[in-house]
Image 1: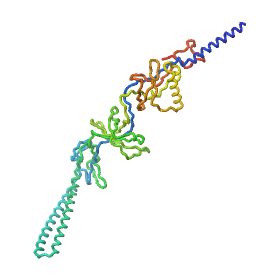
Image 2 (image 1 turned 60 degrees about the vertical axis):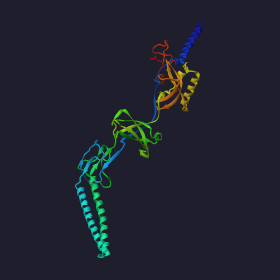
Image 3 (image 1 turned 60 degrees about the horizontal axis):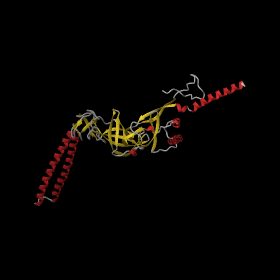
Length: 412
């Protein structure tokens, strides 16, 4: 009898211990403390942009060359020289051109003298013909000589004009006012003008107005419009943001490494002359911009708390719990569809509560939201860690019950 009593008591003790362990195991999630990552709801700008790279260039660029062959004798300007329209920039050797002009002038003077002589003969022949002293044939010959010499004079005048122009071409003058941004030849170089005109200088008309020639991918070109605002940076001034406006979308495609690009011209004011031609620009086209709106980090819209928190949170209504559970299941099954409304989680004390919001514009970093939220609210963007609030005090150090959670540790 005594032996049976001992067995019964032992069984009761074992069952009681097992019950305590099972109860602790089933309630382990209720003791968890969560550490949430949060961010403040703020007001700011949400910008949808298209990115591209481009090159700075002068708004108007003129190449100055020569149409005559000769030795480059003098240069009166250099890189970065400011020139006025008509200003002398360089001189081609005139050793041959000047005598050629003088020779053409002498030939013209000789032709004019011969023409005048033929004219006097024609007058005499006319008088003699009228007085029946000369034959008609003599008059006709005098007239032919005079008319022929008129044509010769015109030809000689053209030769003289051509020689004079060639001489003038030896004096290289600025066709526009601007800044010399390139000098190709040095003094003493023989410049040969044959099938193409050699470029001696390049003049930028006005460096206070530059342009960016941006290469835009064919996938993005449909979002680019004339008049669109543009922000861009250059490596020379990494902390400065420059602004411009789309002026032209060139329809001629340019294929680079099997990628079709289109050149977009952006007008960029440069009043401080900080920008210079040739710089590489990192361009952001403002496709759509909402300013001064409530915004949250984009990942706040995709955050879902652990199911264990949703199951045990008292502050979450059952209807919202069911909606969240359905959403979690849809995310898991990858069948969720984009909806204009969503839930974000706002931290209130130690708890977080879901707030239904309407989504607006998003740029991948921030998302515009509206609803029952205000600036300064703490929105949850992620979970750092979770821990059990305490371990059972009856569990000796270094040992554990098989019915207790093994991941418990003290809250930090």
